[in-house]
Image (cartoon, rainbow, N blue to C red; front, side, top):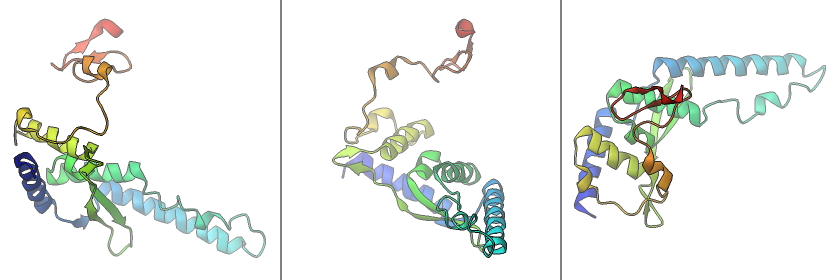
Length: 182
């Protein structure tokens, strides 16, 4: 293990210690979970009330998408946890997190970490943490010593300065609005 990977592991462990491995759902996510639970209960009631008349509601309560906790919800949960616990989003995005929506619990649970290396190449999770560590002042970019990235940076991506083009213009790395696209 390289010296850099050791430093990175130490920082990740420190941040996870601050965060913990489970906790109450943030308010926005808890509200969404309640809404999904109410909707599912209403559909199940329709099924139960009508099952002797017709089978139109039969497939609805068994639909796998009903829990509704897909990537968008889990990403929003990770974003909210990052803000609430002041833990870098890159670390939360590398965690496998699930939602326990039992009404008596309403909590998030970290079930593991996504792999940092796959087929001898750095995964996006490792790359995000490594470069966010530079932004956080944990190490410098020259300290980063990780395997080749599994997703190569396209040549065209290197030409962009700052945030990429927005709908009506571009914001440069200085944070100033460019009028050239209006």
